[in-house]
Image (cartoon, rainbow, N blue to C red; front, side, top):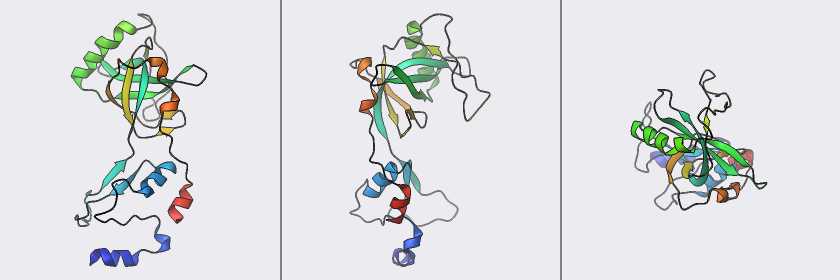
Length: 202
């Protein structure tokens, strides 16, 4: 009864909606259109879940996809112990290696393991590069240690913002079977482009 009443209350001015049913596909076409319009996910709830005021019972379902990137450097963790983030790059069509973002949120054990794996690849004992200022923390030390582009990392990401990952990505595993030179922008999933106004008005 409540679902029927809610359906009757929705008008054309209510915006984009996607009524749920037991036969609704897990990835509705509307979600793909919203991804193409630049939004990073959809809000969903269980079919049998009642609305609960003041409680965060609904979930944000983000778009997730994988990419194989070249490890081009790392930053030491703010504690001074181990790797805080691994910087990643992809080869452009002109053959240049371009930074596209970084993977972070490692456990203490993994931070030390990554340092043992990456430190031998340093370009020099005293070589560090200055990074771009953080838009979240201007005071953060953004210096990083460049390494030889010999290791490939599989990462999970949600979406791109221009030629970079929009958010920090999640490290999945090393890909010793992958040639670093094969890690190009061509592998990235490029969604069809939609105008957000058209999607919300359709």
